[in-house]
Length: 108
Image 1 (cartoon, rainbow, N blue to C red):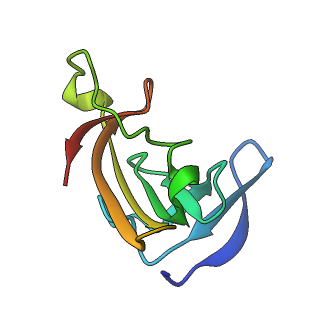
Image 2 (image 1 turned 180 degrees about the horizontal axis):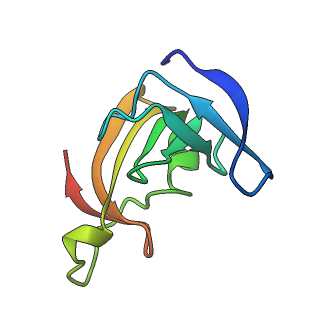
């Protein structure tokens, strides 16, 4: 896994905002990432991409294994890059998804 350090950042509002520093987002190389509801997966603070390691079943909480049914504007899509663990794994799941529906728009 990428080199990750836990840090607490005090933003302009004065409130503590937990985030991690990583070796870089696979989509934009930004170093700061927020925690997601899945342990081991982070969301880039700059572009909204999600990346990290988790079990295959847990990855479905973030990105469903189904295609989008409606056309989604490119600006609404987010990149995902997940190394999943489980039967027949590790397996890399990556591409672009619609965060509103959690469905895949493009693989790779």
